[in-house]
Every structure is written in structure tokens, then in C-alpha cells.
Length: 186
Image 1: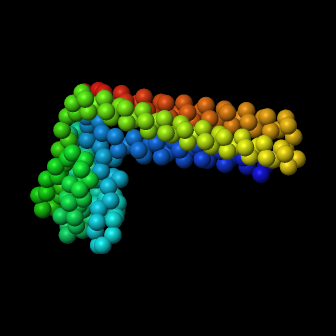
Image 2: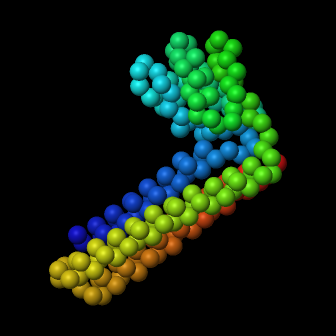
Image 3: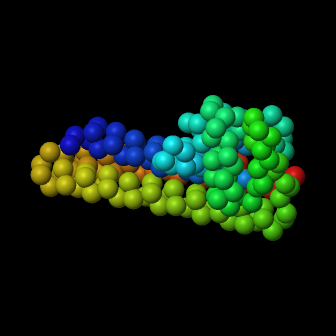
């Protein structure tokens, strides 16, 4: 592996860690309705678990309501059962054509728990990024041992890996802070 290949691999894997965090944070509830709250649900339809996005359009027409319109009306009951089974604390209302979910306001205690959950997700993402840093540094050391990189090149790769680590950890921190602010605002 050349120095550029090591850095490219490290950067791609760190970007994936940030993407995973973004997807997880989309599922964290704020005081407002957000389609991300139910996007990750898998609904048993046609004999297999299917992401809700594949079988229905999900929208938030009002700040306190999510509306789910199934592409096939016969899946309405399955979607309703799946939402109840997911135990999200929501009660779906089925009117025969679509499902409405009213999002209740968050209590202070629930908000604190969600902030703690956000912090844990952010810390997990940072750990992933640090693991990628470790792997990148190991790869640079191995390439130097095999005489494919000089010591100076290895040190330069390690410095750039550290710079990438800092950059992506900062992104994680910013994402988490923004989500915490959303959760805590009334």
C-alpha cells in the first residue's frame, strides 16, 4: 500500500463512521416531527422485513405530526402493527388511507436521556475514528518495515492520519452538539 492508498482508505472509513452517526442521530427524537423517527423501521410485509421507506412515503406536514402513505393500501395494517411493535412510544392512527402519528411534547427527563444517548453515539463514532487511525498508523509502520516507505514518509502519513482524525472527530462533535441543541429546545 502506498502512502496515498493508506490515507485514502483512512479517510473513506472515517467518513463512513460520520455517516453512520448522522443516520443514528436522525432517529433521535426532538420536539418536532421528523420522518427520520420511523425511517429505520422494518415492517413485516409480503413475508419479509422491509424498510418503511420502500413501502410508503413518510412526511411531516406539521411540526407535531408524521404522515405515512403506503404505496399499496393493503399494507396499512402491517405498517400500523410494525410501528406499535417497535415500541417508539407513538400511537399510530389509521384512517383507512394513511397513518398519522402525533408526536407528543418531550418531558425534561426524556430530553436529558436523549442528550445522553446522543453523547454516547458521538463517543462511539469517535472510537470508530480512533480505531481507523490506529489501523492507518499500523499500515504505515508495516509499509516502512517492508521498505516500501521511508521513515520520513511514514511519519508524514502518521501526521496526515492524525490531521484526518482531528477533522472527523470535530465533525462528530459538531453533529452531536447540533442534535443536543435540537433536543433541548422547546
